Image 1 (cartoon, each protein chain N blue to C red):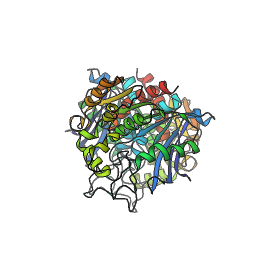
Image 2: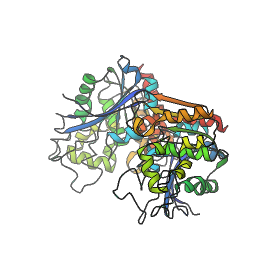
Image 3: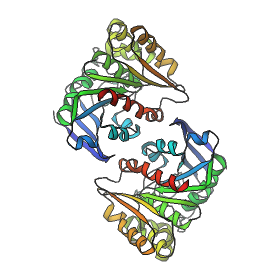
Image 4: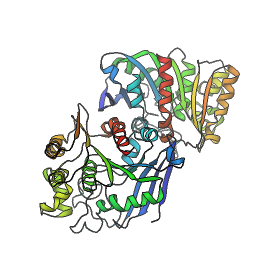
Length: 281
Length: 281
């Protein structure tokens, strides 16, 4: 697995890098960013926080706008931001070019439906291929991993943590899609990637996974009260119900006046990193 | 002076806004951003930090990548980021479309040469028109203003502070052009905007202003050691020499390994805001 360095910039005493590699999971080149904090430059292996981005994003959005580096440098955390889908010539997109399916909208699933099954394997990419690449190329303590994400990436973080409780020691999300089974974004994506049989969708739905027995120690969710997608797509009450029924401690913070943007995410990023650092220590 | 709100987003308890207005100084519409911290939303007037951006930038670069909001929210500072030039149809640009003159490269001067004199009046815009607009529309304590900037904007901050010591109570800069008289960027810009007579340039050169008697209480400058423009354009030693000769306390911090990007700026933004807050208190 050869890693190409796209760029590195010193920041907050660490190194913010952008890297590219040929992915066997997706059959495409994939680009991602990694911040390595100063503690790791000094030789130590440090915990890893995964950040999964939302619809339309690449690694670049959080890398430029996420305000995570100061806290990661203080807390000694590697911060990894993958892309949200395969990209490149020959990768099928939404037939109508919509923003909520296809390019930029991989939903962190392994697609089974043609023509998407060949490339849209973001679940395997994020949970297997990219972690192996990180372990081989960065000073990462892979025994201490946490995962978070925004919107579609919050869905990714919740489902991946619930399905891999031995891998991720903590999980949080910013304005996550909590139940793709019960929102238009999720219904469109899972129909397209997984097919019309909804029983197959349950392994990609945080609330269904919890109903079906998946457990994590606790969950932190921040949700903006002025988020345009709150009622139609995100529906955090569904996660609260599932966690309540399952006895999973959920810290759900409704943040009055905040929208769905990186202005919201960056405001609460430090809180999430401290949440994870406390559980990774 | 009518102000159009382009966008507002809640962030760090305050409001990050982008605004547009018809500028009499430049004869064009101008866009700028303002962060109002939570202290001011509660009714208090708070100090103002001006941030002048570098070549090619608009208000958006620092607004998205500057990592200034957390510290401004803590310290109670309004943060204003103007554009770097007039823009729009009919505004003359560099004849060859170069990045270092014309659009995105106003150099914070009032041009006297045709065809630039009509619109390129960024000195008047930043020191007179925009402050009046801020005073009229935001909870700003205009008796407590500070100014900083990056590269070309660092040049702007230094020269504006030196020429208006009663207006700006503190000044700092990130990787500033310290002497346009003695670097290719400055020579090209001042020739184009002010004309070939170098005596007229001295009022737009921080080192010349100091030599000619201008004074500020002290100056903070951060400069990346791995900045590609350090030796050819920025030359902080010239500022150090001028300050030394004039008895102006200069804190010039060479930051090993840092480049000219917002990864550098964001790393040291908090230090600069604390520097200003201490002098605005």
